[in-house]
Image 1 (cartoon, rainbow, N blue to C red):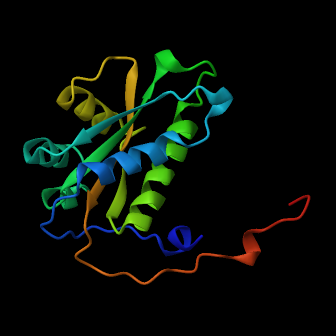
Image 2 (cartoon, one colour):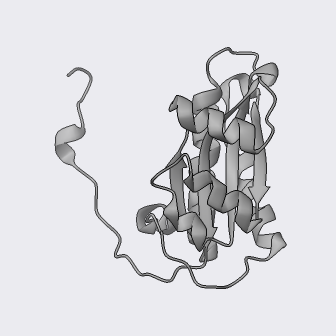
Length: 166
């Protein structure tokens, strides 16, 4: 519960390498996510090449933190692995949240950079990463050891809770 409540979007990183074993833990957490009918339509692309990371900024104006990130994970939905059409977005979102929580628990800073459904961002990543036409990038998760501290925010709001009916 602590990692969930203390998770924050981290956009400033130290010049420090994330070990491969830590990235593997994040991917294991991603693949532990629930999915519709257990279809698991996700695919993950790990990026470490600075050229690839910086090229994303060309079509995603809010991705400038990738300049200092050590790595990124691109979370994609594979329509050929869907048995329940249209649920890949929910399934990949659950996997993304698992990565963010696991990163927090591991002391790794992370931020979710939305790609889908912005057509220019989807096409940009599809071209940059040579994705097949049936694979859609949902997001990019920027990763690095934090060079900033953010206090946890309490977002709990009783006014958003409704019993039985609106």
